[in-house]
Length: 445
Image (cartoon, rainbow, N blue to C red; front, side, top):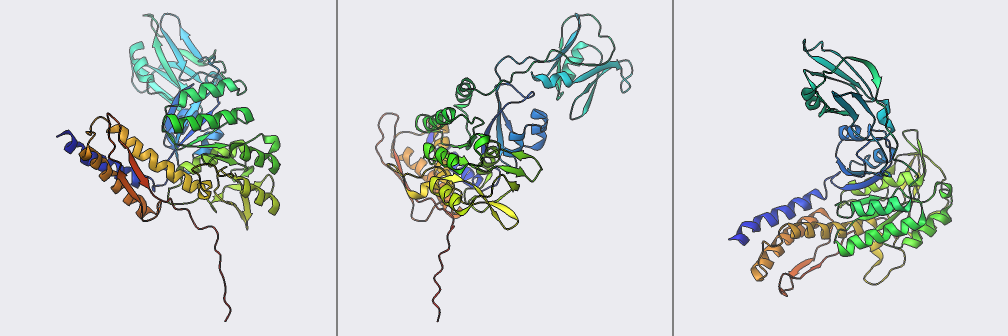
């Protein structure tokens, strides 16, 4: 009975995941950042502009860049653990604290006066960068309840003394949690996000040693945790005009799950960004682009590149797996959506060096594993249980074929090798890439 009950669920969930993969903006990008506002050392999922404003006031460039393609943001504010919240207190009555620790809290201002909206009550006014909030309250308990909805502060009752009026005053005592990003921060970050689900990860570090550690982190997630994702890296700002440095970074990675960003220059918003910042934009675009589309030829919101690459640089970038933007008329486009795989190793092929192919492979494995994990323990380890999972996966793969993610002729079979709590399955399929080179032979007659 259990098997029969779960059968439709397995199939429905796999079909749902397949259809999600060609919906723009369905991917997730992990964006670590440093700022003076935001939940510290915590993963926060952000799906809209309003949520970004509430979490970061819309002031964190890396998050704003990563969101341009519409991907879901998985934000992680890196701090050194020493950040403190700004506050205002009335002894034995209330304490009003900034929602998050950091220097930004010192800019918040509060005032307490008789309420004009509800006579007989008091009103607290909170001034912040987004809007002015007003909450009427009769006592400390109601103030605590009302401020639980604030973008800026939280109130705590500290005693039974009556709350008194106060003229506009700033919160004080907020301290920064920001220091220069170090290898310790990177280790802490990798540990914190190791179990999270995301399609791409933006790396905000330009230290080559940390970049190598990040590659190993992604590799371990893939092999040990079966969580497949793509890492997007860049280099030091001082090297952004040096293609040799970009190429060296790509060669040192040489992995289909690492993309090296060599885009740098002035954004159409008027701000100039280094390749390390543009990598956040690229990571977001990779996550947001539907699996049946390629990023090759996609317009980059670049007003003026830091350097317009010559033919030799472009060929060097393509050969090494370095992703660049090149001028095409009045705009800049992604020359070719490549990852850093340039030297093919065991169980690898040339087409694995293309982002669309690599990410399609990852998506299929992630989708099947995700549904398999949800239904583990609910299907008997026999031919019937195997058939249920095979049936669901075949429907999923049929949908991916219709989307143009994989070619016709694929197979998915049960190895029928069930023993104990393990069972093997075999998928044979060719992921499809986009046509980038049109080789036309003209026979003049």
